[in-house]
Amino acid sequence: MRVPAKFKEFCRNRWLVFVCAMWVQSCAGIGYLFGSISPVIKSTMGYNQRQVALLGVAKDLGDSIGFVAGSLCEILPIWGILAIGVAQNFVGYGMLWLIVTGTVPSLPLWVLCLCIFVGTNGETYFNTGALVSCVHNFPKSRGPVVGILKGFAGLSGAILTQIYLMINFSSESSLIFMVAVGPSIVVIALMFIIRPVAGHKQVRPSDGSSFLFT
Image 1 (cartoon, helix red, strand yellow):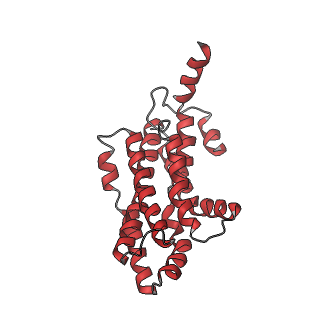
Image 2 (image 1 turned 180 degrees about the horizontal axis):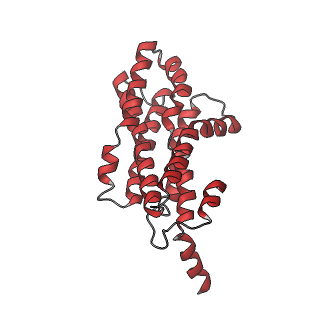
Image 3 (image 1 turned 90 degrees about the vertical axis):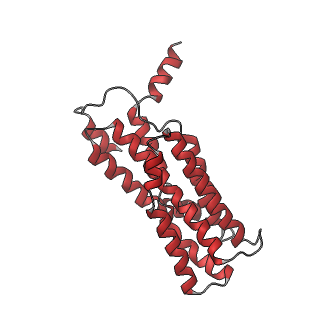
């Protein structure tokens, strides 16, 4: 009986939630990879620079429209918010990968714009779920919490690129596949851990060193 009790206590630890949120944020900057995947789309689909710029606009719109995720966060549990983000990320970039690789027939430019918009908008749900949970769990340390989590979001493009280079895929379009699958796997694995938890929320003397360690 002691082991399950300790395990439950461990799962309710706000620092565990914070670390898992950092993992999620490491996948929440998918839009930063557009510069890496756009040359593949341009060469494969035969687009000119103007058409690629339209894809970039769709990416920026998807990355910026976060009020839907924020509104849904008021009525859905955090795991539900993250699940929507996973679905959008997987469907959007998964469909983009199928189009670029020729698995499905070539489709109009607006379809690719829609795919990128939907896929990139998924990261707003990752951001919302991670930030809302951790701000709730650390009400007296919101500055460090938000700063660290947004920092990991900014690094996510570099992190995913290094993973792609380490695996050494044979096809350049595999980066799009990794963007569709990788973040989805990470978020699904952690979506039930990231949530507001009950317990001690006051500032402790050790919090400063703990944030520094993370």
